[in-house]
Structures are given as C-alpha cells and as structure tokens.
Image 1 (cartoon, rainbow, N blue to C red):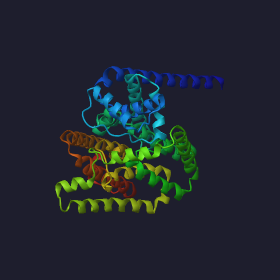
Image 2: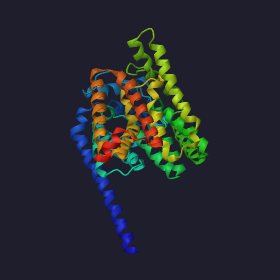
Image 3: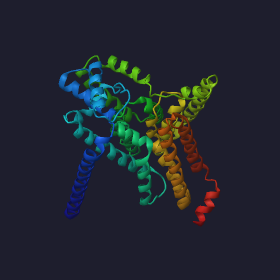
Image 4: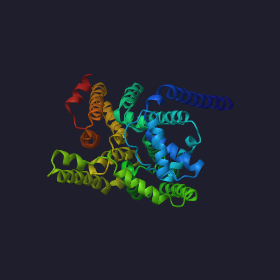
Length: 408
C-alpha cells in the first residue's frame, strides 16, 4: 500500500512538473515569437485599466484611462482601428489581478496567452471526455489542429480576448454538473458570468434546466460567489456600475458590432428587417421548444443544449462580432464526434472535409470582410448539424454512409 501511494505521489509530481514546464515553454515562445506581432488590444485594455485602478486610483472606465490605453495599443504598431471601450464589470475585471501586478506588458501578455492556449487544450479535452462513442486518441490531434488554425480562434488569440478562458470555465462547470459537484459548478459559472452578449442565452437555458431539476446547490454556489465578487467590487469603487453601464452601451453601439438585421438590410433594404425578424422568430421558437421539455434532459445532454444555445445567438438579431463564433466550438466537436462514432473511417473523412469547408469559408469571409458568413450562414449550418446529431441519436436510420462504413 505504501509503495502504491509513493508511486502515485511521484506520478502527480511528474504531472505537475510537466504542466509547469509546458507553461514555461509556451510562455517563452509567446514572449519571443508571438507578442511582437499580435495586436492584443483586448488584453491590454483589461490589463492597463486594472493597473491604473490599483496603482493610481483612476476609474478603469474613465476617459483618461481609455486615452492612455489607446496610446499604448497604437504605439505597438500592430493595431489599426478604434479601440473598444472597457466592457467587463469591475467584479470580473478584478480576476485579471495576477496579470495587472506584472509591470512589463510583454511579460503579462505572454503569461496571459499561455493561459489562453492551455485553456484551448483543456476545452478540447473536456469536450472529448464527455462525448459518446469510443474514439481513438489519434482523433484528438486533427481536431486540435483544426481549432488552432480556425479563424475565430486566431482572432480571439490575436486580440488577447478572454473568451476562450471563459468558455473553458463553462465547459469545466458542465463537467462538474455531470459529476454532481454542484457547488463547484456554481462557483465556476459565477467566475464566467460576463460577456452575456455571447453567453446570456446559455445561462438562461442552464437556469431553466437547474430549476426544472431542482439542482439548487448550483444556484447557491453561483449566487454566493457572484455576491462576493460584486461586494468586493463595491468596496473598491462604489459607483462602478453606472460607469460600466455607460461603457457597455458604447460597446454595443460600436462600429464592429453586427446584427442580422443590418446584413439583411444591406441585401434587401425594404424587406430586410422583416426577413431578420422571421429568422429571429424561428431561432426563438427552437429555444422555446427545447425549454418546454428541458426537465427531461440529464446532465449528459447539457453539451448539446449548450451548443444550441450558443449557436442561435447571432440569429436572434443580437449585436454580435465575428470572432465570437469561437463559442460554437463545443457544438462542432459534438458533430465531428458523431460523424466518426457512426461511420468510422468514412466519418473521419467527412469530418476532415467539413473542417476544410469551415476553415476555408470563415477565413475567406474574414479576409473579405463578409460578416454574413459568421453572423448568418455559419450559425444556421451549426444549428442544422446539431439537430442532425439529435435526430441521428434518436432514430439511427441507415444512410448511404452506413454502407460505406460497413465496408471500410
């Protein structure tokens, strides 16, 4: 028994050393090869705003801090455009404290990117661990490589966005829900409770599911953690809420925010708004249909519900940014897994073809400045594929690909 415990201790120690070594290696690569060429404007906005707050006492939402941040971003020579206003609530901006204590911007940014990149790997592994079907380990590599080269992910890393870390926290919370660790799930969900333009529909869907299932421990952990974060923010600055709301309104009205209504109006000025409303009503009807029987879903089905809730957001007419398409990652992995689990080699080839189509399509749209692909066509395709997954799991009808899979 003692020998076994000693071996386990050595295994955990080696794992910890491997993680620390990996972080150190990624940090050095970021510092010397990534930081000089990336824009990082989103990270610098959060980092400098919090730095000025803790060292100078300046409000992170003030015009003075915004002007100083703009000067830093422009001086790097990698960003050309108008800097977005700070739109994180102070309660969650304080989560950047470990990075704000780093005085040198290169060190702070390299550390942040290492956390983001490990967040990507962790998100992929978390989703893989929850998928049905016995996939070979070799399937992990092409999926990880696809997402590393995926345009929305590149845009998020290039800007230093916190979106990927937030998505990782949410996926870890779903894992905790599946394991009945409700209080820990609530804590993680509270830490990730921002950027509600992207994740608000998901949180609403999850709230309905928790209430239907009577999982009050999750709501208790969430409420207590969020209350402590808000209390800490009010202790530091009593009037931060009004300043934050003002910045949030400016952010929603910024030029790089797109809605389905604007896209349809650009195509059909007269009928465009009506078409956008029709799409929004259909997307809302899908949500209402899923919410109606949500109490019958088990925790293992939350990944599919999360994928749907994140996919329909731009179709509802909510202001959206193309890089936020990154939130579709869990739903896509669910689709790729279903292809492979049902059709083996044929499914793997189909997965590679879909990856190539999505990879090329989103990159081409980003280069051409065609927001319709990210805001309309990709979400529609994502929703259709997710409903195919549901249909396939329930019906298991035989298709032409099943004959190919049987032969190959």
